[in-house]
Amino acid sequence: MLPSFILLLREGLEASLIVSILLAALRQLGQREQARAVWIGVGLAALGSVVGGAAIYITVREYADTTLQTAFETITYLVAVVILTTMTFWMQSHSRTLKREITEKASAAGSGFALGLLAFTTVGREGLEASVFALAFAFQTNGVLWLTGAALGVAASVTLSWAIYRMGYKLDYRLFFRVMGVLLLIFAAGLLADAVQNMQELGWIAFGGAHLWSTASILSEDSVVGDMLHAFVGYAQSPTALQVSLYLVYLAVFGGYFWRMTRKPRLAPAARASQAEGAAPASR
Image 1 (spheres, helix red, strand yellow):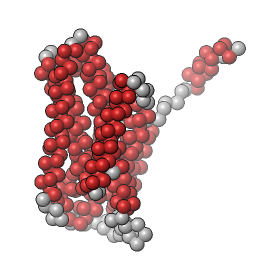
Image 2 (cartoon, helix red, strand yellow):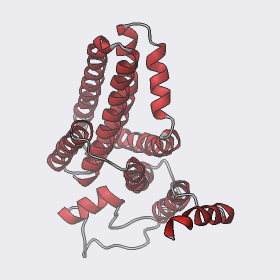
Image 3 (cartoon, one colour):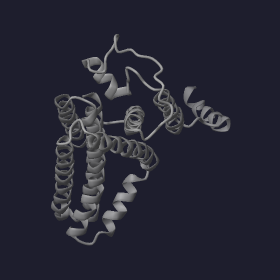
């Protein structure tokens, strides 16, 4: 429930940010009448993501408890890990230039169709990412809990977006995407561990299969808490050596780099001295 909530909250807020930039660009260009085309593109992107994801999920569920389902889940986990990782770093590196890039694309679009297509592709990218993650988390946890978390995440993102753009609420986007990025990387590490477990069960990986411990008698993955921890941090009641190793290596490498990447830059000694000199007269 919690992973789906955080995922849909982040993706929904990012999509609303993109739409708001597009609409603001239209106001600056004096083309407010093209807003309808933007909303049509947004609607088609959202509809396509939901229908596509649901169709794949229902199709795969027909092969429940078969090797085909396990193989598909494994591939979905790996794809989700790649997209989660690249998306997190992409958003962080483009956060400062995102508004300029979208505004330039909107300026270059010469028709309503082009603007609608721009909205469809930009928002559709978020929808595609959300669909892949949704499939991965849906395979991991209880369907009802997942749907509840997803619905709450969408509702929270819509409410927060309305508060930002209608009521003037100030959101620290830098802090928001930093926290969301850390959480999503933790989710990705858990998905990677699940993928490794599946590949070992399928015989695709023949090494590192020794089980390090078993906590099934203390906290089973089938329990409510165990299921939540499994979906949130990749908890496994009897993990293999390869699962634990790749989980820790992934967090150490990508989590550590992301944390350093998002730290506030420290001022050089000369800059601190200059600030101190500038503030000195005001304190007299």
